[in-house]
Image 1 (cartoon, protein in one colour):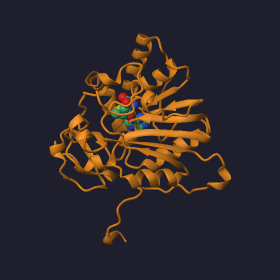
Image 2 (cartoon, helix red, strand yellow; image 1 turned 135 degrees about the vertical axis):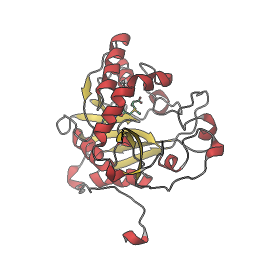
Image 3 (cartoon, protein in one colour; image 1 turned 120 degrees about the horizontal axis):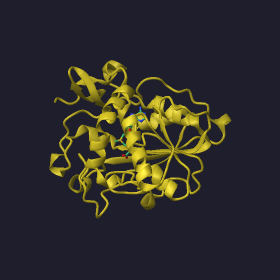
Length: 284
Ligand SMILES: C[S@@+](CC[C@H](N)C(=O)[O-])C[C@H]1O[C@@H](n2cnc3c(N)ncnc32)[C@H](O)[C@@H]1O
């Protein structure tokens, strides 16, 4: 299979492709990554948990998790006295979440939803978060950021972890010796897997500028970036994330942002299309 074979613009319906793939691969994903646990809030394969990092507000209020998968993070929050709602586009992932709800006795409400069309009224939540959910499967972050901004109350928090933007230029290997640049930073080509000529998996690289400009463009205030190193004691290698490479380069970016409390002072115009692409002479 040849990766990066399709321009991002040639993937017409990324949410449908994500749904298709995660519906069919939920069980394998959960079996391959025991570190996700059942009642556990892990921010990244480096092994850092919410207990370690304390990124959510002390009083997170009404919480929405997007791209929740089997909802382990929300279940951890519920076990700590909060009342989160866990959402995901994949019915297969939510089915796995329902099984874990039953098995653990910690029940979190599960909602099937695409992050770019959330079935919630404006200002419904005080905190929205995801650990590696949804964003990598979207060519353009702007629509997701705008929708999260909408469902957050003014002053609410948006915290998320994603594959570190630099990771995309390197081979998908956990070894530091393989850190050789093989594709351009900021490529507009997606990682696509196909079956019978149809895309069945698509992931989209985003740059640091995509994140910053996407957030600022819809009106968020960026409160912090975190690039966690490898956590001592974490021994699970996860794709390109492992202790060898993790000692040299961060594999994860974690971002904290806030919807401004004072709406009158922040009236940004959301921009369509990809953000922060490097400008080439021909594009100027
Ligand atoms: C890498 S998994 C992460 C799941 C979970 N947060 C975890 O840490 O195990 C990515 C999740 O994002 C979900 N997803 C992909 N595209 C989505 C979209 N457009 N809207 C909502 N969820 C989406 C997938 O169904 C999948 O459950």
